[in-house]
Amino acid sequence: MVRETVKWATSEEIKHINALVPKKAKIIKIIKETLDITTFHISSENGRIPFDTAPGQLVMLSLLGVGEGMFSVTNAGDHLEISVKKTGVLTDALHEVVEGQTVGIRGAYGNGFPVDFCRGKNLLFIAGGIGLAPVRSLIHHAVKRRDEFGSLHLIYGSRSPADLVYKTELFETWPAVSDFKVSLTVDHGDDEWQGNVGFVPAFVEQIQPSVENTACILCGPPIMIKYTLGVLDSLGFSPENIFTTLEMRMKCGIGKCGRCNIGSCYVCLDGPVFSLAQLKCLPNEF
Ligand code: FES
Image (cartoon, rainbow, N blue to C red; front, side, top):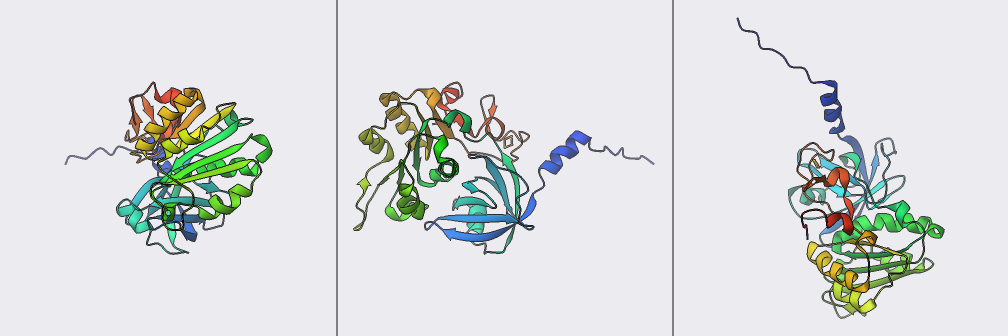
């Protein structure tokens, strides 16, 4: 009789397997932002999120029997907030969940925004569409610690007024914060829209934000980022002062599956936030 040799997992392998096991969490609140974007407030079953998060970090959110995906934490405190745009099987299923439903969560992953670098500087946030989700985590951080940062300016665009996310913050909360300017644009207005109509890069060019002691946080569709980078360059922003966040092709979140590499970097470990100076050394993603 031939006996099969059993190969036991090493302690290192067990550590990696454990890191992939999600913790149970509950959807405690659902906010419908637009037709295809929903924000979920998530708490663990005992009311405490089992890990800390920094602005710009990511978490893996899973739905039993459907799958899991990596999402930016858009706000964190005693609960996590994650905004999800309908783009496929998992995100469509997430849009069907109800308050009180159990989901899986693991993280937090990635480096997050360079908060220490930004401290003491003016912050220019530029976002398009759902790209405001990761940026919002840093906005909340800066608003809570208002005296640690200079002026705040958000330039944000969406396809239409109905596609603007976080409308209460855009129109009420943030404009009421001291030295916080909010500039909005849409690709196509409607009968009630009184703001700017046009694409984000052209709007940035029109506004001509100052480069003086300013760090720029940029997030949105690749085409928006590509053309906005050109405008920022013409305004004199240096690549070291521009940061963006990449969130593509992630599976494990811990540097094991190899799905998220750009050149020699893993987005899940070395990113998702990169300065433009760092991106210039990597294969072009825009
Ligand atoms: S997501 Fe698996 S290596 Fe980055």
